Image (cartoon, rainbow, N blue to C red):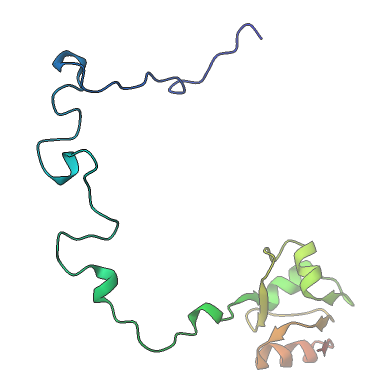
Length: 145
C-alpha cells in the first residue's frame, strides 16, 4: 500500500490563464489573436460554416430509405459446419452461438454453398442458399423450418 502511486499523467496541474506572460498562458490566454472565438461568450454553433450554406442544409432530404431496416445475414460456409458438427447434430442459431461460430445478440445467419459437407446434419430455422440446401440433402441431412 505504501508503494502505490498514480500513473504517469494522471495528476496534472490546472492551467491558470491570464496571470502574466511568464506563466505561458498570459496576454491572449491560449485563445489566439482576436476574432469571434477569442471573445468571452463568443464562438459559433455546431455546423456553422462561416456564412456558407451548412452541409446539413445543402444535402437533400427527400424520399425514403430502407437502410435502417435492412437485414444483414452473417454468412456461414458448409465447410465450417462440417468442421464444427458431428453426424446427426442439429445446426441452429443457438448451437452456432454455443460453438462461438456466430457472435452477437440480434444476428441473422445464412448458410452458403462454399466448401464441402460430409456429415448428416439437421438444419433448423436458418436461412440457406438453394445450392447449400441441395448439398445438405445430398449428404443425407435434412432441413427444418
